[in-house]
Image 1 (cartoon, one colour):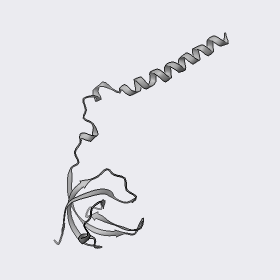
Image 2 (cartoon, rainbow, N blue to C red; image 1 turned 180 degrees about the horizontal axis):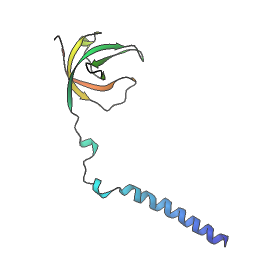
Image 3 (cartoon, rainbow, N blue to C red; image 1 turned 120 degrees about the vertical axis):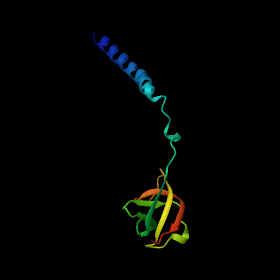
Length: 116
């Protein structure tokens, strides 16, 4: 009688390990028509900010927008690397990993000195 229970247990394990991955990989049918995340285009945004020297992780320049948002410029030109400089910026938020634990990674498309 013990062998019957053991055989049922092993059969149940076999079904779980073979059947579950197949079912889990199928996913809901309604999601098959949705575009993947790679099809989503990033949207350009613009804002006015101050250039700040951030003395963390060896130091780097960041942008602090007028509304307080913090952006980590991935390609800040050398001519704009001045503490306290007010700039108008247009670019895209990027989904990348950086060593800096500060701000949202941001790729600059256009930047100019901003003197109101």
